[in-house]
Image (cartoon, rainbow, N blue to C red):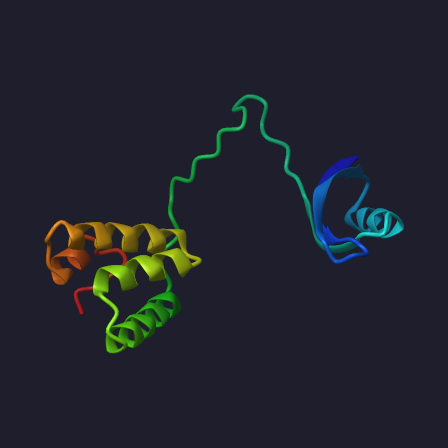
Length: 133
């Protein structure tokens, strides 16, 4: 038997979530439907290695994609034209991005800006995200 985590909606439309111990993903979906829950997402839970416990360390952080940088630049342009202060714009974009690496970078840039460092120097401190161009 495998363990599955699910998210779904009940008959009233309220969001419900939980775990099931059942043979397969399709069996989990059938069980939820019998209970009156429409499944939205079902994913199998991976068993943690007993020798390591539940330690989850990410050694290599994913890179910020070009698409994410393009979206960031366009949003920054729109916010600057609207008269939003740069620090406030950076924090707002950091809150709204899906990329964890870009989020951390933008928060660091905004903190450096608040401490009086110019924007170019703040961005140069993150060469893996912002190129020299």
